[in-house]
Structure formats: structure tokens, C-alpha cells
Amino acid sequence: MTHPVPKPLASRQPSAPLTGALRVPGDKSISHRALMFGALAVGETRITGLLEGEDVLRTAAAMRALGAEVVRVADGQWRVAGRGVGGLEEPADVLDMGNSGTAARLLAGILASHPFVSIMTGDASLRKRPMKRVTEPLSACGARFVTRAGGRLPMAIQGARDALPLDYVLPVASAQVKSAVLLCGLNAPGLTRVTEKEATRDHSENMLRHFGAEVDVQIEGAGRIVTLRGQPELRAADVVVPGDPSSAAFPIVAALLVPGSKLRIEGVGLNPLRTGLFASLREMGADLAVENQRLEGGEPVGDIIASYTALRAIDVPYDRAPSMIDEYPVLAVAASFASGVTRMRGLGELRVKESDRLAATAALLLANGAQVEIDGDDLIVHGSGRAPVGGGLVVTHMDHRLAMSALVLGLATEQPVRVDDASFIDTSFPGFVDLLNGASGGEAVALHSPWD
Ligand code: S3P
Image (cartoon, rainbow, N blue to C red; front, side, top):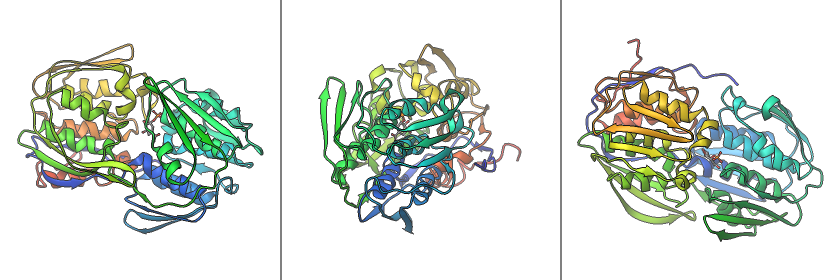
């Protein structure tokens, strides 16, 4: 639970045009799941392209603590020797999930149907985040959870001996909650069913099938009913992790905002339940092309070419939120350069991310001279058609995506944008700063301490 050494950084501006080709690290959602499903399968799962960010390394450590053999073979290449469904063993110590809500909530699902006691904690950000959204549905399988007040970590989990299958209607659009229920259902007899009113990312469903489980998905309007047959024998399978579209978002927006840029981002995951940002940017007039589309490890992948564009404001509908839930801070940055008023609707879930991202995104822009309002669950950005002045200090609240959004903003503002602590970028995007520097030829986006 040690807090990394704070890393104050600033974007020096204006940046030289961003050019060339680059790759972003592996998809965070898929990386967590590959390690977890690998640990629950029989045999050896080989993973390539795993995100080696702090969040995923926490999952790797947790699966090891639960008895799976998890080995790093080379850069991004990992091997997991699984224990089979229901085969994990009681951990000898507290499971520390660091900054990662996905790791904590998905693991809660696994632990709920393993008949032993475990204790889970996280860093100061994760210990503020609500766990009731998983402990409540998971309790119905027979598991017991003891949390701090408000359903916060640390929590103790007594997993069910003979878990019951769950039938749950998601009250919030959350792939984490959906996945927790499905993971619990893996070690319960019969059918586990999750109904979601709005489709959320379906990596768990896809990967469960890839490992041999029987998963049925019925589409109902904008939502889905997912049914899993419990106690399958999961068979080890190779997983190829695509580039994370949520990480690609940052260099893509940077290229759109810095005049003269043309950047190619290779091998980006294009699962349609993750591409809401790209749809929104296109509506804003962004020059975005996709080439080399293909299927890799069962997920659609392509190269994205982003070129500088003068953007225009749009209205982002409520029902797009699940497919771009992590991308609103950087979209808000883009909107602050656009001409006109952009309204992003239905962002209530942003309040319970790594920080209160709704308030923090507004504060990020306000500190740098943009005009922003929060209206209920909507974020409204008044773009002037040119770069905000910049010059602000952004408080990142242990939130990687706020830090990256602020640094992207600072590539194109008149004054440098400073962030109080960029160390959390390593949770999802190790190498982010070097990658921006490389794309700009080194100097123009050199990052420096605000006290230099
Ligand atoms: C994730 C689901 C989303 C997303 C998070 C990753 C996942 O969270 O914000 O970064 O891998 O299932 P919610 O389920 O809370 O929306």
C-alpha cells in the first residue's frame, strides 16, 4: 500500500507536431481477465502483449498468492499454470489490489465461491471506492463480506462452500459487476444469469468462451442477458492482448490537438463496446482513419491514423457512456479546443472512478482557462475554437487518466500545464511520457518538474 514517490511533471509547449508510428501497451481489461481465467483453467495459458502496468501486476501477484503459477517469460509474455475452477487456495496474507478497481471487484467474484477466508485492501484511492456494488449481489451466493463503513476496503471475505448460482439485474452499467457475478458463477452449479440494460464491455464473456465455458448472450434492446453454465472445466488457452483503446485515446487526442501532427497507432483493440470515443471524435470532425483491420485472439484490432483537425462541439448521448466510460477526461480536453458547446450526458459513474473524475475533469479544465460546468450528471465544455490558455496546476488525485489528460492538454496550450503527480500513469500506461516525447522528436514535449 505504499504510495509511489510523487512525480510532478509539466508539458512544455507548444509541442512539435507528433508524427510516426507507435504502439500502446496491452488492454488493461483483457490483461486482468487473461491472468484470472488462466488461473482458473486446467493447463498452461500463454499470454502475449500483457499490460505490465501496476494494476495488472497486482492481479498477477494475487493469482500467485491464491496458488496459481504465474511467470513472466519475456516482455509482455506470461505463462499461467491454472488450478481449475474452484481450485484456488486460501491466501496466506492480505491481497493488496493497489489502485485497481477492476482487480478488486473481479477478484471478489472469484473469492465469493471459494470456501476460504481472504482479506483484500488497496491504496488510498481504491479504499475510497464503493464495493457494495459487488458485495451485495455476491452475498446471495452464500458468501459473507465484512467491509469498512460505506462498503469500503479493506474487506474480509468468507467464500461460500456450496455457492448458489446468481440471477442478477445490474442496477448500474458496469462490466466489473457483471464480470464479478459471472466469475462467482463459474464455481456454482447450474445457470448464472446477468441482465444489463445497457451493453458494457464483453471481454469476460468472450474470454470465458475462449476457455471453453458455455456462455449464451441474448441481445434485448440496448441491453443483454448473459447466461453462464456453472462448473465448466476451463481449458488453458493462448491469449493475445490487443493494444488498449483507452490508452490509445491519449496519443490520438494529442495528434488531433497539436497542429501539423499525423500519428499512426498500431494494433489497437476495436471491440465495438469500447470505441465510443472514436465515434465521438469522428462526429467532432476528427481526421481519424482505421487501416489494417483484422481479428487477433478473437478481438477486432486495427491501426488508427490520427491527424490534426480543428474540431467542432457535439452532444454525446447518455447511452454512449458504457462504451467510452474511461475516455471522458480526454474527450473533455478535446472539447475545450472545439468550436461550440459540447455536452457529455449521463456521467454519474465517473464520480466513483479512481477519483471523482467528473469534478476532477472540470477542475482540470478550469485551472487551465477553459469554461466548464457540471449540470447534474452532465459535463458541459464551452469550446472557443482555439487552445485554452493553460498555465494551471492539475491535482490528479492518484488518477492515471487525469494525469495523462492534463499532459495532453499541455501539449497545445499557450502556457505549460503542470500535474502534481504523474506517478500513477504507470498503473495503466508505463512509458507514456517517453512515447509522447518520441512522437514529438524529443524536445518539444519534454516534461519537466514545475520547480525546475
Ligand atoms: C472495466 C470496467 C469499467 C472501466 C474500468 C475497466 C473492466 O469499470 O471503467 O476501467 O475491465 O471491466 P465499471 O465496470 O465500473 O464501469
